Image 1 (spheres, rainbow, N blue to C red):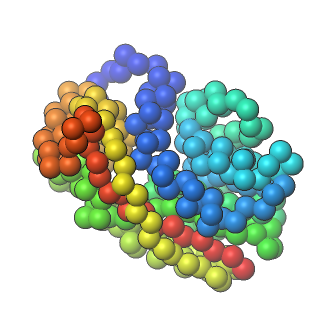
Image 2 (cartoon, one colour; image 1 turned 120 degrees about the vertical axis):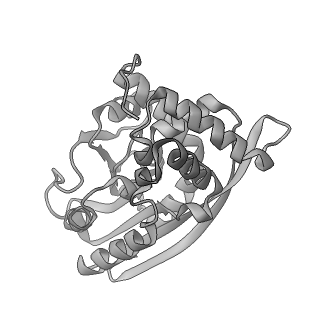
Length: 263
């Protein structure tokens, strides 16, 4: 299904991204920040920061004497991130496999569900290790596969029904991606690598518009136009009927891996 012209501006799309994604990722930010062990006054890079949910939490942990940078390749997401005032954060547009920082710059590198958006994961993890100080640490969250996440499983079924199963190429490679991350972190000198599971129950709007907006953020829904997203959203909502609450939400468990690594 070909893309149709969007009447929304790129910044509007980025704001919709934040509204659709933040309720899902927010419960995992605390686990990410805990795993990172950010020192007060420390320097932190948030890799693939999107609209900066985790970046802002890192800035609060580092405190006013810290240095925090959020990096993403999408300037529109960074523009929405920069709309949040009150914290001093450097927003940087760049590719994760060519970080524009000198070696040994940061105490910590974090990534909140960003590794799933990185095409060249091996080089990007190498770059993350390069910009870490010798005693620095890395922490990231990575979604576990759809069979562990009912919401993503429902989206995958709907996308396959509307766009064909080929649209889901790569959706099952998350465990392999976790193993690759761990391997590259150890190669970069972070030998103490630990992976844990974190589960959170999240209430999401039982609303086709919300689900369509979330589908618009998904790599696997990239071939759906607005009509296709609406069709898929209706299918997702029907699929999740058993999870609906009297409050007009769908209450679902989400499961993520938290990876942290230190020398």
